[in-house]
Image 1 (cartoon, rainbow, N blue to C red):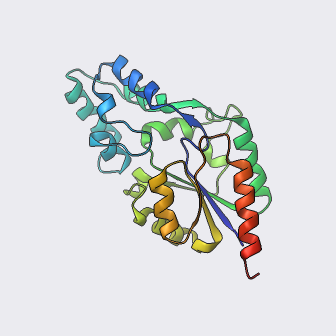
Image 2: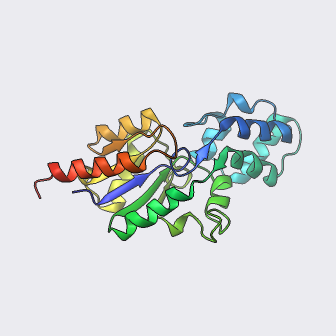
Image 3: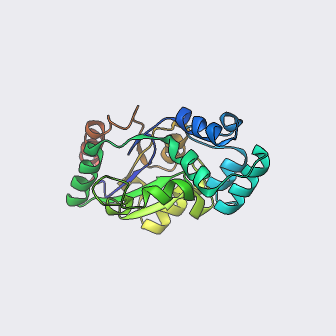
Length: 214
């Protein structure tokens, strides 16, 4: 019996394109963004920000040093938020439906303060709601100080939720992330993009219910 469904953010809830983020950082004056940014796991100061090792202000200051010019907080936010491409309304509707059916929904994301500044705002969904409107709990790498695919972030989430792996589904577009979750006994789904997980998720839930001794 599935009780908890855990979702990644970028690439699952909304579509992403790291090339747009790289372009925005380049436009702001940081020419080496391509060496630091990835679709799943950032490196250098970008990874340090998402793992909670440095603050947003420390990131801005160190980015300025790397760029050889002053970078503003707005430059940082615009760059990071460049990952966002579009947010399918059908995904939001599906999240609402799943909660109405009694599932507990959690977000588990490698992310940072600059991205979440927008994601948590009322401008996020175009309907006047932030991401918290759609989830029961948010588990964010920079707040937890650990990133996927480290098994500790999954263990921390399960413990906080009092969730049983066999009663939990994790939806993420990263192969390393779903592998790590599956190793803990969590049911996993790896969609190809942010628009094709609805039916596969329903099939996975149905299969889990059939296999449940309940």
